[in-house]
Length: 279
Image (cartoon, rainbow, N blue to C red):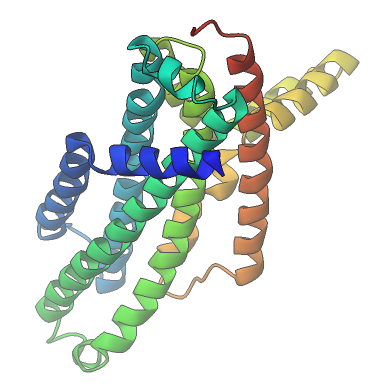
């Protein structure tokens, strides 16, 4: 129960950070401006693909920034300012503190992605309408069937946004694990390194596996197990297609994969925080 109280406080603090509002508003303004710029595509379908791809990439970046800023504010700042001493003397156990911080961060990211999804959908629709209107002489049927096309594009983008959120939740767990033990700069570096390496896990695993030795095979297996494969949660290429759709079974697999890795990383955070001197 105390973990949920900490989660609620963390959510309120993180969501009301000025930087959170700046990130949300800045991304919306950026997408609105870029969405109206000439995209120099050769067809209306390419125009729509580019709009959706841009929205998904922007959402992922925004989620990452919110995750690391919120984690640093909620954990690192409290530890460095000794605020955590007051919390742990309530009494609140260390595992309740860590779990509560992660749940609060996860709730913050979920709400932020909900807001971004609504706003980005409206912006993508706006960009789609302007593109379709420009091509109205060539594709008059697209003007007539705009809302059918728009709802299909929105459905595709919403499913992709779920996977963006899952990626950021895994990274949020990494941020929590780093912040409970490491200084801010190191936490930020590890956070972004995890994002980069996580998208090349398969490449690294295959490269190490090509050594053809037992050591190489074991190392490849360890790389696959220890580093979250964020690329497996990246469906931007699938969703930008006009007729491509992410299946419910794939989304279920993504949820299960995220649950396993976030649980493992939070357990690691508990171990890292267990012996840290804060009192």
